[in-house]
Image 1 (cartoon, rainbow, N blue to C red):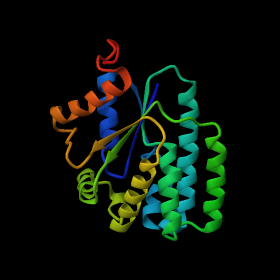
Image 2: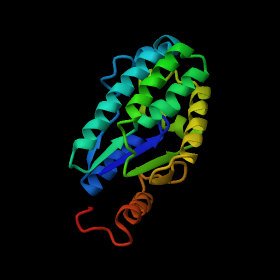
Image 3: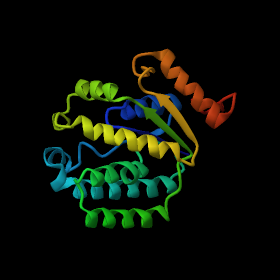
Length: 209
């Protein structure tokens, strides 16, 4: 089984991935951030490093999806290949950070990969406003994220909404502004109840937790 968590930078994907993995005994797969050789350079000079960064993410994500498809484990994934290609790369292209030539090259590669990729069994989208995202980003204090611009986050948020509106797979939307799932057991339980109902019916399977 493949469960995926989607959401903008600072929405709480990694936190929710950890919490759900622990609750359901799912195997977590995290976004390759700390070992990304382009991330700091990208935030310092987006136009120079945008294509390199997106190709790195795309290749890592594709390898991960292929591995997940061959696994018998129940896996929860922090961010998806669809976000890279449907949100981050188009946003960079629209903002002039990626050339037409590089974006076309990237898009063709993604189309080829998609012929081998299926949708997750469940997509969990954390919907968060810009103030919530900024608060979370400031709280975690990553140096390379200090230069993120508000207009960059706004562009991503709009593309997330457009993407999720047309998403064809099994989907749960989490209110990231009003559900403090990290600090409130009640709020986290509300998300778990949605998952239980979606994946296991009204009465969760005995081995689900």
